[in-house]
Image (cartoon, rainbow, N blue to C red; front, side):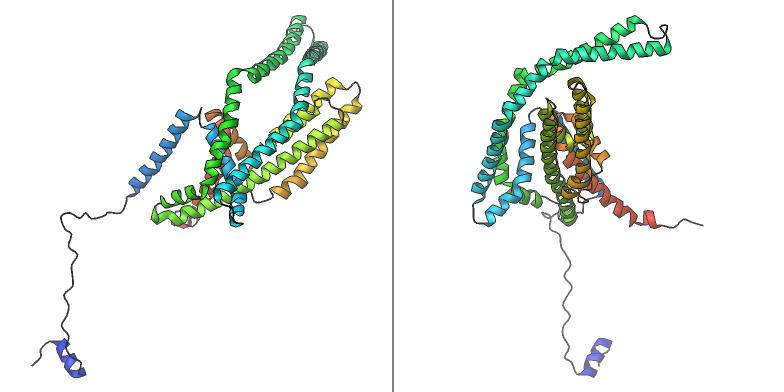
Length: 392
């Protein structure tokens, strides 16, 4: 007689009784170790350690990293057209070499076309420095005389007037001699030559192996967070590529416009001032302010009447209208989620911390920090820390 209820059910249903397989328990051999999930402290320690290593590398090798950072920027900018050439059937190495040679040819063509004009205008500026010093001293004396007439000789005396007028000329002379010394110093020439020779070579190898490097870094991602990291990396790439390529187009168009328009307006140094204002426009407001102040000051020193000054001012106003309502909305638009104040702070902070290397790395780091801040803000707004209602 079957006393087991299971056996009674099986007899009632007519199903044959099957032996029950024993449950296998997981046995850990002495040579095996139980893998424990990483703790939060371990993750935080790993992140802090990576940041410290990167910071120390930048501190120790900032003087030699500039060509490599410039090569990385070139490889990042030229990767899309290189990938397009590979899809057409060219080997990756041939496509990378073609893009690097094309870039070098474009730079050499630019140098051959504009170098004599730029050199002539620099010589003209150096030749006119004494004239600018005399005009600045006269303006300073007149300003002090007006102040003396307004506030009396007890507040503004003749000694202060002579001191201000002499120091105004000395400041301009010091700036000119400093620029001449920096341009002509052997170390500056060596650094420029190193940057010009080493950057294309490193850029070629980085561009050729760019996809391999991306796959290698992707294979190092922690499996648990790989999807989240890839999503944030794609967001950084979207913002950064839009900023770099859009800003490059805006700078070139503005440099061409200001150089041609100021030259046609009759400003003797319009070529270098216009090109400088356009190329500096990647720093929000800095290019416009620098170009505007310099152009108006040179126009006041050059033209005997207000007609030339007003014409230069009109060129600057039209440039601002084109920049704000045509060029920037067309090439940047709303794709770049980098506020102007954030870009200015990043550029100046990077330059103060690591010099020229910091300026090159400022925008990528600023874009990355912006994406991470928006990601954590979204997580915070969706968390119970934010949604938890107040207690009554």
